[in-house]
Length: 188
Length: 188
DNA sequence: GCCATTTTTTTACAAATGTTAAAAAATGAG
DNA sequence: CTCATTTTTTAACATTTGTAAAAAAATGGC
Image: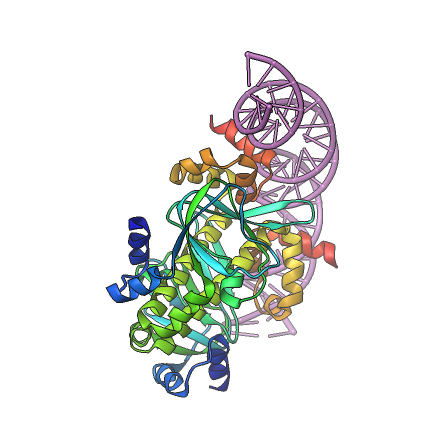
């Protein structure tokens, strides 16, 4: 609970009353490895906060899956397309470990945004911060080779590489698993 | 002015009073080709709406520039990093044509967000929609070859390719200009 | 601990992209 | 229109990455 509150306030500091409103809608749940939180083609009706565990978001290609996001402890999870447009998303999100999450129904969240200006600005800040993170990742990929991206990942999120199988990481980096193996062989 | 109002309301429909507050802070300006709206390393103090013209956002590499965004008529322009964190951004934004813009001071925008819940939700929606657009672009790049991305650009924004020099488009697609030339030669 | 299954690495060859340099085409100022 | 400059295309070769298949290593259930 403490981690959740700290995270919420780090996005945008909330007045105690607003924080209470938000926390009142968040419920702790435990879900097993491989559980699909959001399924492509369906509307995601909840957002989540990861207290313990890992999630990955991916899209189905013709003959492959492409992972484009990992969520770790302290991250929020939502199907952007569902969350934002209320439409079926193109991505699926699944848990890669047995996990503990806080869930909030999308409906409740949207209602809070319309009722409380403090929370509306919190929601704005949340989207803005996600936007920056994604933009940095996007630009980073334009500048750097797969090899440099891997080195960076190894430096910034070493536990991510230990906890997630390399096939997923390869597609996250935009290369095949064979190429990632070659990169790893070079570094050693 | 009409385009601006239409665009604003398409993001999130505002009450007349809120719309008036927002428009009251936006001022029409004409700026020449090559004008730098935002300079890397500086804090961007304004956001813009493009009524007529083109802008591009880019980062400086060691020995090259990488363009990662184009703005056309109807787009909003801001240095995310400045806009969101109030810190110097890593990107520059410049005009590629003589342009007509509406400018709003960042300071005014932030004040409106804190005062008016309608506008706070508008700002939230704006960030969310930008987030989705970027995510779609990000995923698209993971799935598609440079050749497919170019074909898509040609289909969705043909005037963009006519108005912008190919070197910028090549870096936007994440390839060298030589590769883009090869792609274009194949398609013909 | 053992075996079946999954994941990762390695290999050989094919395809795509980068690099450098030069030629061709387009643009813009006078 | 002409000339200098910029932009785009083409060429030859080097490097990187992909593909397919097999080997090696790791994992998980019993």
